[in-house]
Image (cartoon, rainbow, N blue to C red; front, side, top):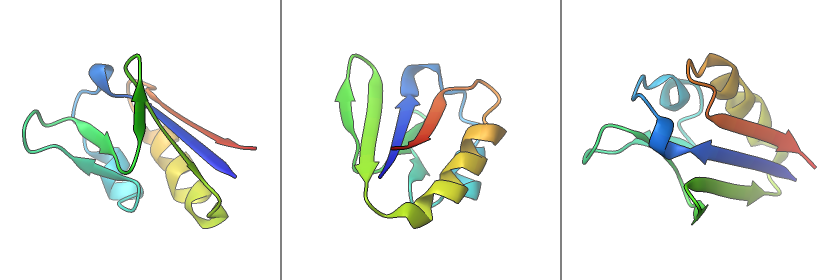
Length: 76
């Protein structure tokens, strides 16, 4: 299982996550910040849990590219 967490309120809108993992992220037209697709929100943290292991590499690349370190990606 892959778990991805986004701390959206700290997003600066650089768009790297969308470029590297468009299946998991998109930019909001309202505020220009990243949106983690199909995520549930809890106290400002947006999380998805997926059994699709194929999303790990792209999501981890997005994590590494994020200049404000607000993306967490784990395999559990």
